[in-house]
Length: 160
Image (cartoon, rainbow, N blue to C red; front, side, top):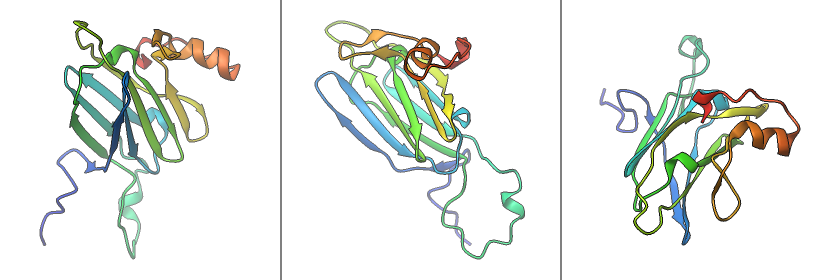
């Protein structure tokens, strides 16, 4: 049996859509079956790593008749085509799709990195807020969730 080229040593490689505007890069990645807290985003200089932990510890015990996708682990690493302000990244997760919005660095501004997990804002929905508005003003996830969703979320430094 040959090795599946879509499965890496750490996870299933997922397809992406990456597009840009004048001031930001946006990446959309399907990660079906995960919860927001299963997803990790790492932005390091000109690279981004998107990963999702495996869910459902008993999925390997099932007597599957056909399995064309798994519930993680997922991994996708990309080289970014522009310098970005990773510390100001916004990310949303809903309907099994992760969307990461990265403000581009301007002028001589250096790239900044970040590592974060998403905050759950409802069943199967999550977000990480690094900026608000068109001019990418810094904002934290907890203050955004409190303002927009009326929820009190602890400002956990690991959640960015």
